[in-house]
Image (cartoon, rainbow over all chains, first blue to last red; front, side):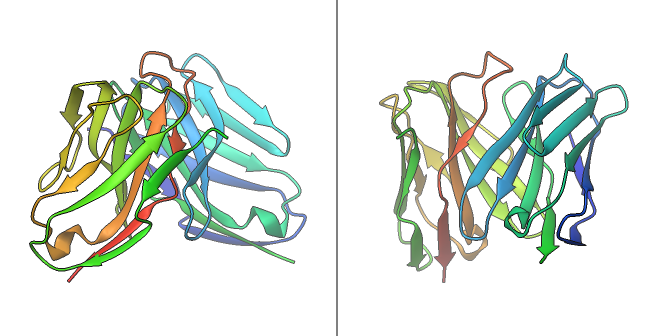
Amino acid sequence: KQEVTQIPAALSVPEGENLVLNCSFTDSAIYNLQWFRQDPGKGLTSLLLIQSSQREQTSGRLNASLDKSSGRSTLYIAASQPGDSATYLCAVMGANNLFFGTGTRLTVIP
Amino acid sequence: EAQVTQNPRYLITVTGKKLTVTCSQNMNHEYMSWYRQDPGLGLRQIYYSMNVEVTDKGDVPEGYKVSRKEKRNFPLILESPSPNQTSLYFCASSRSWTYSTDTQYFGPGTRLTVL
């Protein structure tokens, strides 16, 4: 069964710093990998989707990479802002299910 | 506005009292699913539906039922809720499960407490 791990579980950084969130998965037979953002008391918002044939995707200050052979993905956030404070979840798409990591709780300190 | 809606958003109930959490999407999506989120365990899939009248079990289906009579609606039914079903529940939908480009859209969540 697919297992998804996110490290670290929590991260605090000062405003303006660049940061990297990590995601690893055990089964490389995936259709895609998605990064989501979850704000307290709210649902999940999709940030980036990387198809299994792709290496990276970019949206604004966010860049996600995928190395399927090693079972790893990273989410790079440039010039972090207090509004980036949230929990970030990665999920891998299998045959009929999304397998989620437990998330990284990010706090950006003004 | 494209969205997934869930009702109720908050619910406190007692053991054994049947309840239904509704989920509706307005994007004509074929694929819908239910997840529960628990601290330290992340999101786990309960049931999913590839299309109308097609449903299947996810990773944690025990104690839950679903139905998909219409494309837009996918209610989650707890016939006899127990305290271990206290959790945060999310409904999600996507255009289909066929295309690896289809992102998932999530509802706002339903926080359920079973006493």
